[in-house]
Length: 288
Length: 252
Image (cartoon, rainbow over all chains, first blue to last red; front, side):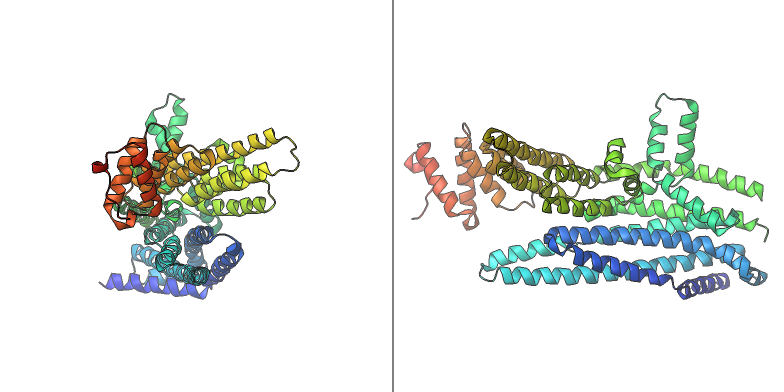
């Protein structure tokens, strides 16, 4: 219980520290991006406007949370060592495991809050645009029958928010959480923040090809042994990041089946847990 | 420390092997739900460039498609139909599950580009203008057919294909088939089946089937009893020489 309280205290302090680093300024860029986008695409049909607003907003959410997860996590260990904060904390009866878990908790809090704020902003802009288009439609169809008007209004509302977007946004968070714990793992044996960032970015790209490597390896194609070995290495050591790219199809109006959603959540949760466990294992033996 | 690092790599590989069944299951579930249909191949790489391909590979297909769509709109404003067709190809490859892109791309080709081709003052030969017009009709049809192959679980593109075949190709049999396919979806609006009936009535050899369909629709209730349907039903009864006793009782 005491250890949990200590972990939470580290987590909360990490979160406050990150907030004080003014990381939320990126929300201004996000707001400018989606408001600017909705003004820029005003000349398009309303279906196109809403599609593009969703494309840009969810894409930006994915970019910002991924960047935040990598950059915030990569910096905390070198920074704590430079400030010597880590020695003060670990000199107390705080296990290294709790220290790492606390740090990861703080970053998760930051990611969760960022995604909530971005979702809120996105929904406000979507709502404002929807009401603008609804008013225009009502004015244009002033003389039409109630049935025609209702059909036209339904067409507008069905192009805007749909419940399918919610699981898509949850998956964006899961992918960012995975990247945070992966960065944490790399930072436990890396010597600098830059190295951690470069390694994670490289793994980010390789991870998007993991599924291709896995298929190649498991298909048993008759090629040189070393190329199969390489594919097996990629398949076994890197995360399958393509599995978390569901928002592209969600934006296109496709609903995520419950089984797929739950399996993806489970996959993400397992990645986070194992990367964290391995980070704790390496960090326990690290000389500070 | 080194021993721990090696142990971590070994455990990572063990964990990766343990996760393979779940990864494969997630991929299968995604494919079954028509997710991740985009084929990220060399052809796409050539069309979107290195950065675009990298973005598509990293899970940013939809924003990239949106940017390209804006480019297509600019091409439309400049009436660059050939460039538009190329961009539409890329956009629909990047986002094959977006009905809007297939629908709008087909509409631009079959309706706007075809009219522009027909009114092209730089082309004095009417035969060549007609040929260009037909090529754009065909481009629109191809887009819708490819869209249907990528979205076989949704009715909207079947409906649009029916409209295109009816209005641009005057292919009533093909249009009837497309409207019928659209009407098979539970969420399809009731007019899909009505349209199928109207087109089937004009399809040689399927008049009897069309009559039965129109009759069934009429008997469904007031929501289907539109003047076009009633007039066509009467017309068909005369044409098929339906005995008075078997005819639908339509109040005057």
